[in-house]
Length: 286
Image (cartoon, rainbow, N blue to C red; front, side, top):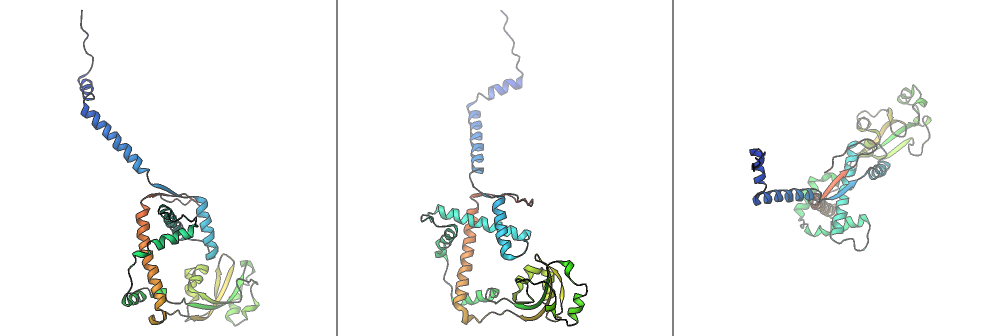
């Protein structure tokens, strides 16, 4: 009786022997368990999705207050603020601060008061240093008054309008009647001027050395001709007269620093996804 010869190659034979070893079984099993654990860990973060409808709602609300089209940076800041607020709300719920069924804003306030005890006490020297380094917080806004001629349609503007205005014509004899854009604009802060007319136009309008008629300037509402006739530079009151205000601002600043650190630490627990908007903006997921 003839015995059958093995048809296995040396490599196949060695592999066959290898997979029978208990140590190999242990290594393979450990590798699979490690890989599975990594997959679970990668997906263990709580998802935080900012969908298209949420973004468009936030943009619409902000734009209605600012009265101008939002820039890309402004939109990014709005989304980032929403993400931070959402993290605060979720962390507040984990701490049991929503037992009374309070609304989103109150949850955020609860979280801020929760960490307020970590704030150090400020000496007079620390408050004065804060007042000096953050003087813009206490400085009243610079405001300006303007004469204005406003047209809804560019086609309605007389070709020689600037010539007539600079020759001394009464500007109230020109333009369209509009309750929001009257013949005189008063107490206009610089930030509002920039938001409405843009940086370049605002800079020319704030030129106190040569206050002439300037235009046409396009806005979302129409076309404007403006002339500066008064400007009051903002000033900060003396430290001694506003010390309680400085104290409140210092506490707010320190609290925001604490909350920033809290949010940064908590952010690692969330898989943040900002969905593309209808405008085609693509945001990176964290």
